[in-house]
Length: 145
Image (tube, rainbow, N blue to C red):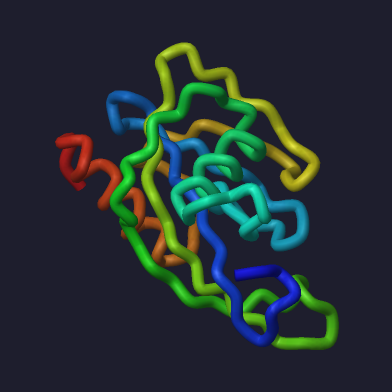
């Protein structure tokens, strides 16, 4: 569960959509320099992976009042070269979907270079699984894929 567990540990996060499902809120990750959903490592105060995802999404997006779907939307395993220097670490990432209130005003956190709303029809260049996660979130909202 914890960051210092190598070579693999659990992480959790949330993809944030607006209430219409037409826009996705992404962060330009400071270390990876790629656009991603919000997420991160488990902390002792987190009782569940949903709690991890909710906390990380709030902290990294600056948006209070996110509504998280409690059912995981996607499971992913990926290598993170910058997590533990000198060791190949795999994140076992449990991803949820969150919906932002209409009044959501995102803010950049210390972990991001930028936080921005993107039209789902014209997102930035993303990892393949991110397009799948966006489609899952939109499907759950009933706005298609």
